[in-house]
Image 1: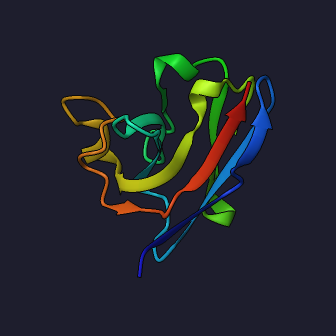
Image 2: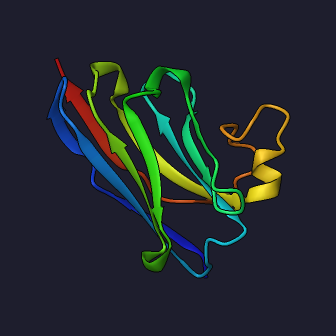
Length: 130
């Protein structure tokens, strides 16, 4: 059974940092992409970052470039999202998701589109106070 479990969310002041973790079970990363998405009240779920384990490429939402870094520890089957210089507008529930890398990265809307991700975690809340 495939499972994705997020952790690391919390409450932080603007300018602070958090590191989210997404630990996968039931599959190995080799042919998969792992994406981070967020859902804020009144907004649609948006893709924040993605890492393709087949190519090693990473992708970022424009508004988080230079502040967020996605990385992977294959031995631990865990993907991390390091979030620095957090802003109140980063407040959301953050989800990780898994999809086959070639399909995810080949989406017409790009790898941050949620459509071709097959498996989703339950989410972790990130709240940034001003």
